[in-house]
Length: 591
Image (cartoon, rainbow, N blue to C red; front, side, top):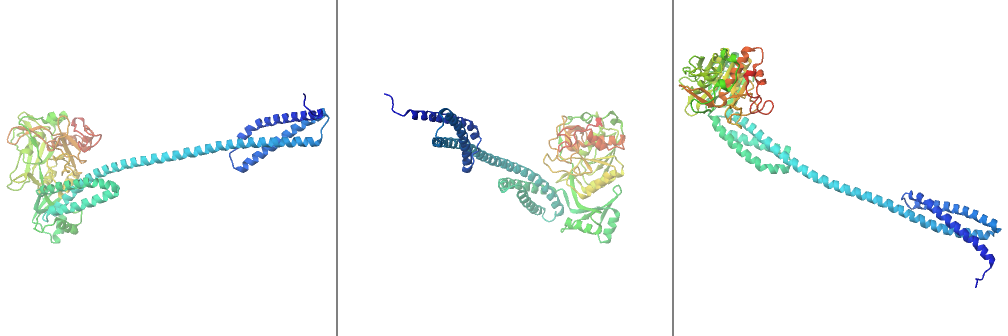
C-alpha cells in the first residue's frame, strides 16, 4: 500500500532536500578550507575569539547564501518558481544550522589553539624555573667549594709569609736590641720587644688578609711557631752576648769630624789613624750605665748622621770546619780547572785570617807578607790561616796551590780565647782592611763570619770604592741560619761551598746574598806544624774565587771581573741566581 500524500508536496519537498544537501556540502567544504586559518589564530583573550568567530560565521553564511540562492534560482527555473515565503523559510533553517556548526567548530578550534599556546607557555616557564633553580644550586655549590679552597690557600700563604716575616723581624730585633742594650738586661729587653712585635704582627696580618674562620684555624699554629721563635731568639741572645766586647764602644769618622767632636767635649784616649781608608778609629771604655743608642745619638747630634759611625766592638769567628784524616782529600788544582797561565801569574791577593805557618814545607818558598792585628800578648792560632794560604800559593812537599807565584798579604786577626775559641774583633778587622788597601792588593779573601757592624760595613764600602774586590765565606750555620757578615753586605762577594759532584755543602748558609759557589768539601791543604789534612767549609771555597777574580783583574783591568765570573759560572740550581748556589759553580777556565 502506497503512502498517502499530495503529489505536489512531493515535488516541493524534492528541491528542498536537494537544497539542504547542497548547503551541507558547501558548508563542509568551507569548514575544510577554513581550518588552516584557524590554526594561525593566536591564543588571546575572549574579545579576539569573538571577533574571529563572527568573521568566519559571516563569511561562511554569505557564501552559503550565495550558493543556495544560485541553486534556488536554478530550481526555480526548472520548477517554475516558488513563493518567497518558502525561500525565506529555507534560508532561516540553513542559517541556523550553519551558525550552530560554525560556532561549535570555531569554539573547538580556538580551545585547541589556546591549550597548545598555554601548554607551550607553561612548559617554557617550567623549563626556565627548573633551569634557574639548577643554576642557583650549582652556583651556590661552586661558591662554597671555591670559597673553601681560597680560605685554605690563603691560610697556607699567610702561614708561610708570617713564618718568613717572623724570622726576618726576629733577627733584626735581636741584633738591634743586643747592640743597644747590652748592659740593661738584653734578654728581658729583646723578649719584651719580640712579644710586642709578634702580637702586633699576628693581629694585623690575620685581620688584614683572612676572615675570622681562617684566623681561628691558624691561631694554634701561629702561637706554637711564635713560642718556638722566642726560644730560638733567647738562645741566640746568649750566643750573641759572647760576640760583643761589653766594655767598649767605637767611633769611626774622618779626621775633621774628630776635631768637631773634641770642641764639644768628646775626648778619646785611644785613636788609630786609618790612612788607607782615610778615617780615624776611636776606642772608648764603656761605663756601667752604658747605652749605645744614647751615645750614637749624641755623636750624630754634633756631626750629622752621615759623617760618623758608632757601634760596639763585635766578635767574629773563623767558623767551624770539618777535618778529615791526614793525607786525604782533593788537591786545589784537581778541584777546579784554571787556565794554564794562572800558575805563572804574579797576583796580588790580600787575606784576613789567623796566623800563617810560613815555615811549613808547602809555604816555605811562598811569597807571603804577614802582619798581626791581634791584641798584645795574645795566643795566635795558625790552623785556618795556614790552610787558606796553602790553597792559594802552596808550592812544595808534593803540593801545589792555585797560583803558587802570587804575592799574598796576610793580615792575622785571630787570637785564642779560653771561652770563645778563635776570635777576631771589629777593631782588628778594620785595621786589617786599612793595611791591605794601603798595600794595593786587587782582592781581599776573608774567611770569617759574625754579626753586622756599622764600622765594618763602612770600612768595606770604602775598600770597594777604592777598586778592591772583597770576597768572604757565606757561613757554616746551616740552611736555615741567618745571613752572616761581612758576606751579606752588598759590597762583598759571598762564596758558598760544594763538593766534587757539585752538591751544596750540608752546613752552608743559604740566602739571596749568595753570589757564587766553589769547591769547599774535602779540600786538601797544609796543616800548621807540618803535614796535610782535608777540611770542609765555606771558608775553604773562598780562595778559589779570590784567585779567579785576581787573575781576571790583571788580564782585563778595564772589565768588570766579578760580572764576567758570574756570567761564566755553571748554573747548578734553579735558572739564574738562587739562594743555594748564587749564580752557580765557579768556572775560571771559561772566563
